[in-house]
Structure formats: structure tokens, C-alpha cells
Length: 546
Image (tube, rainbow, N blue to C red; front, side):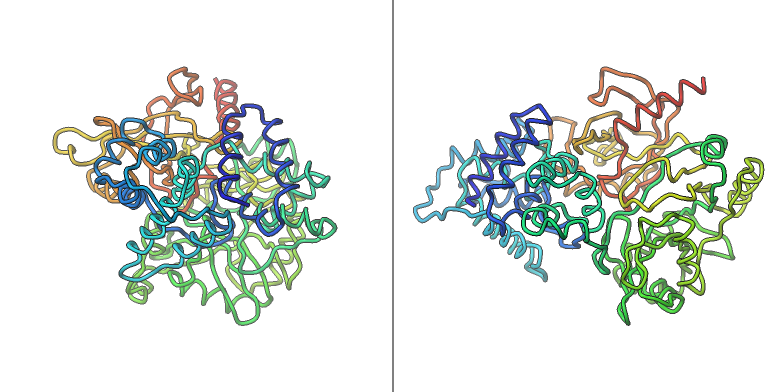
């Protein structure tokens, strides 16, 4: 497939507002596209370069893109930055600049979809002292050979910000329609494979095997998530529930097969080298080949330490051995996804718990099972006294649903009014903060994963954190208009608020009253931020309480 065909398809999708029409268009493309390119097409259409389970990263920010583009069009980097600042949409600016470029390529090559993908792989695998220059050269090659329209989508792909409305749900519906596969089979296959590109290819080439796919060790899957709720409602709805501590730590997924072990973060990034002590503890405690789900906490004098302490250990790249001595890291395991090669996510939680207890000699998270609200309330207060965030309540017959945030797991904690949002922009500060970002623009997501602005936050951020945030965001700047800056939206803030209000000032239709920065959540991915649907639920619950 020519990359130009991909770009033209993306332009058509971008002009479509109807989800059904978008699904029909994609289904038609899926049927016609060569098998060997289908997976790449699916990932690219979603703005993904590699499978969701892959740890491959392009390592290519806006600054490098501007440098590569400036070279291709024969202008200075400042000229490119100025053009982007005046327009905002980086893809369309690249398209316009390529149309006007002064340097003509006499020996340009027609780009193929597969060639672009292979070039991205080369960029991701480039390492060493000159890795940035090598990535820029690859970007120069792609942009030099691109038509203006191709440039629009190449730029967006390099920043993994396609934003044409193709979310997971649209792709799954299109796969189901294109190859006449029941939607529940497509959904289950996606949970196991964690790569819609591979799901689409299997649906096309081996449809009978799609229902047989299993979770594989060392290919991490999304973790099951919880939403807020109440003890009374859970007991009234389900009777007996399992109550467990809600730890103020970092989620992990531990894989073991034979002598090989690996541990992955909530964002599915491997952190085996950062947590050798945790890997060692789990490898000695696990008696089977497994994939298990848990949380790692930092311990001092028998008490859990704050979440940021855990993050400092995980971020540590050098001198890890001394860090192991300084901070004791303790795993707490609360679920199992694979046992001796068998995927067990469809088993009821009670059965998975028995499997878990028989597969580990230590580190299984404690729990009680009760239908008594007062007993659960007492367990909750003990969890707080022990230094935990609160408790989790889990439905006894519930399956494990990767990536799901539903009513099967409920979290109970004192600070119920906090929310995870993506940072999309900022404003420069004033006075002594003039060279740092003073306030930050936040966004939730809609059903397609598109970001919708909902609030700004400036309070709760001390000078040390502002300095840290400047270091994080300075290389993520996409455009700048006066005091306003827009970022690559891949950083998450946890924000507290007094009340959720309906608002016409923000795209999400809501606003946060008295928003306050709580903490940086760099253990979370943008796909995990608050959705409009969950905002509607929060607003409804808030008004009921009133």
C-alpha cells in the first residue's frame, strides 16, 4: 500500500463525523488491504506506531520534528516554530510548508506504508550518543520524499498524535463488520493480544483461531481498573464482596516462565532493571509459570511511604543497587491472569484467588470477604490507620477484564473528589515564576480517545514541583502563542476539586470548581484519564448526595 493511499484514507476519515460512516469506511479498507500491511494500517490509523504491549518508543519530540522539517524546506528552525505557533495544528502546518518548500527533490522516492513503518522501527532502535541525529536524518528522509498530504500524517504519526477520531471502539466495530466476527470475540481477542493490529490480521486470515487466542507471557496486557463507589451500594447490589487494601504504590504486572522473569508498569513499560529486588522476591515466591497483578509499595519502619517515593525508585536509572539499600520495596499481589500457560481471566474472582494463593508462598495481598457494611467499614478505617489509601471492593464472581474500568472493582478512599487528566498546555508564570509554567490546561477524553479540555490548575504546585514540571514539559512544546503553550499530551496530573459543574467554557461540557494539583501520575497512560461518560456519572452522584 502506498503511504499516499493511507494519507488519503485518513483525510476522508477526518472529514467524517458519523461513527457508523467511519466504521463502514474502515471495514471496507480492512477487506481490501494486503494482509502483510493490515496490522500497520490499523495501528497508524489510531496514531500508534507499535503494538500496545510493545516497549518500543520512537523517542522523537516536537523539537526534533521542527529541526527535520526546517532542513527539508530550506528554512531556519525558528521559521517552522513561528508557523506552527500561528496555526496550531502541526499536521496541517507541515502540509502547508511542504507545499511551499524552496528545495525541490529531483530523486524523491514514493513512500510505501511498510517502508514508513520500517523507518520508524529503525528510529526506535537507534541508541547511543548520536541517536538524536540519526532520528532526525530518518525524519528528513521521510519528509523529503513526502507529498504535502503525506507530510500532514507523517508529522502526526511521529508525535503519535493522529487524532482523526479512530478509537479502539471504532476499530473493533470495523473488524467485526469487515470479517463477520461477533463483537464479543473481537473484544476478548483484544483483551488477550493487546494489539488491535494483530486482532484485525487474525480476523482476516485465521478467523477460526480468533476465539482461541490466549494471553502470552512477556507481552503485557492492560490492567483492570476501578471506579469510585460506596460500601453500602456494593453490599446491597452484590451481597458478599472481597475487601482489600488500596495501596499508595505503583501497579505492576509480573511475568514468569521457566527461569525468565519480567515486571511491567501500569503503562506496560518494562521495569525489571529498575526493580531487581522486587523481581527477586517474586521469583522466589512464585511456584508456577504465571502472570500476576499487584502493586509495589515503599516501606519504612513497617509503614508504607508516599507514592512519590515509589516513583523515585522506579525512575532510577543509575546506581540502582544503592537505591535498593535505601528504600525497601514490597510487592502485594492481588490477582492472577495466567497460570501454567492457561489464561484464567474468565474464571470468577473467587477461583482466581484460590489459584493465586496456591501459586505464591508470600506477598499475596490480605483480604476479608463480608456482606456486613459495618465490618467492611472497620476494615476500611484500619487500612487508613495502617497508612494505605483506603480499600478496594471486588465482586466475587467477576472475571478479570483487561483495561476495563467498571463496577466490578470499586475504590473507597477519603479523597473521593480527585480526577486524572492529561496536560495539554500551560501559561507562562509571572514574577519569580516568569521562566516556568504557572498554570496548566487539562483535558479528559471522549469515547474515541480524543481529548476535551475541562479545566486549568495552578494551585497546589510548590516551586520545587514547578521546576520539575518545567524540565518535564520544556521538550514537549508543540506551539506557543504569547503566554500560552500547547504540549504533547502524554503527562497525567491527579487533580482534586470541590465540585463538578456544567460549563460551556470547556469542550468537555464540565468544569472543576477549585481545582488543585495533587500529584504527577507518570505511572499512568493517557488512555486511563477520565472519560466524559465517567464525568456524567460523577456529576449525577454529586447531585444525588446534595
